[in-house]
Amino acid sequence: MTRVLDGNAVGDRIRDDLRDCIDTLEREGVTPGLATVLMSDDPASETYVSMKTRACEDLGIESVHRELDSSAPAEELFDTVEALNGDPSVHGILVQMPVPDHVDKRRVLRSIDPRKDVDGFHPENVGRLVAGDPRYKPCTPHGIQKLLAAADVDPEGEDAVVVGRSEIVGKPMANLLVQKAPGGNATVTVCHSRTDDLAAKTREADIVVAAAGVPEMIDGSMIAEGATVIDVGVNRVDADTEKGYELVGDVDFESAEERAGVITPVPGGVGPMTITMLLYNTVKAASLQAEVPVDLP
Ligand code: NDP
View 1 (cartoon, rainbow, N blue to C red):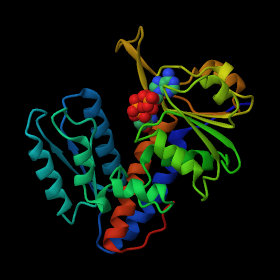
View 2: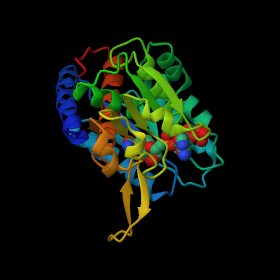
View 3: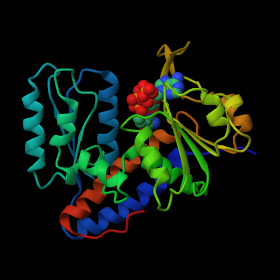
């Protein structure tokens, strides 16, 4: 019997525990604060930011939002980040990616105070993750680690294949799975667009994390019987729906479900965990900056 993991349910449980942490902080006069910065006309980016802001408000995290014209000079963005770095009521800063082409993305990541970098993309935080001393784990792979734990899937000793090597999903996922730490200790293979015979790799895996951004590229024939399949992909494909499209993952759910032991759906799998772990990192940031210990879930 294949188990379909419910990211909403696992995320809700973590959010409940985060509420207790926020109560602890409030008792010490600290309200966690997240700043979101948007410099884009892309409707998807606008939707992501408003989802994050709403999730903060629902939980009791203060949210501030800064919006810049996408044609504004890059310096305006850096000035905005600098002001937020200096604002003690802001514990976490998130600049929604992608930024316009005229803005140096790597400089944006470096400009955020690493103590407020709740996405975990500042080079200092990336380095700490790789060194096995993470401050903020990037939200999507961290959420996947929590989902696996909630499903009692322990990566220790397992063969894991991560499909994708992006800075935000693939690489940090591989790093977390290979760490000598709880939720890690897997033997990890990282695949990408130049990988030869991907199916041969995924077929050998106990755990497959699909993060390529290619609709339904991993089907049942590429999955070992009983494997755990985590689908990160969120892809728009044309469909006869009101909106004219539907969202599908990187995994062909129907055929993969027949072989997998555990599988995540799209939507309702990894997505809700990503936002939950952003809230987690913001609460952690407030706790670290205010020096008020909390019992993080
Ligand atoms: P990127 O486009 O940054 O990276 C995709 C990676 O997949 C690259 O490393 C690329 O290889 C690799 N790849 C592309 N095509 C293939 C292929 N045919 N075979 C093997 N590898 C391939 O994407 P992201 O990491 O940002 O996102 C991946 C997916 O996850 C997207 O659908 C995105 O929307 C979704 N996503 C979902 C989130 C959630 O919360 N659910 C959060 C973040 C992302 P190469 O390096 O060689 O180009």
